[in-house]
Image: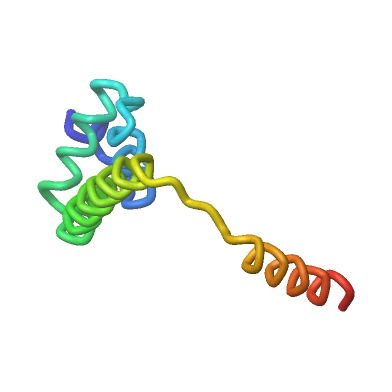
Length: 88
């Protein structure tokens, strides 16, 4: 009976990623939770993934409130550097 809930670590990380974006099915979430009971490495991955997602969401909302513009001098400098790189 429990064989149907068994997934590899690769599958578990994929389900974890899908779950973060509400794309995982109920069965996938059950499989993931079952796997997390057995695997400490994947449990760590889930914690790190949730932390990173939270940090990126906070940073993204912060960035939207600031207008980012390069000065004309910075734009010219960037253009020159890009030309040098593309000519090689």
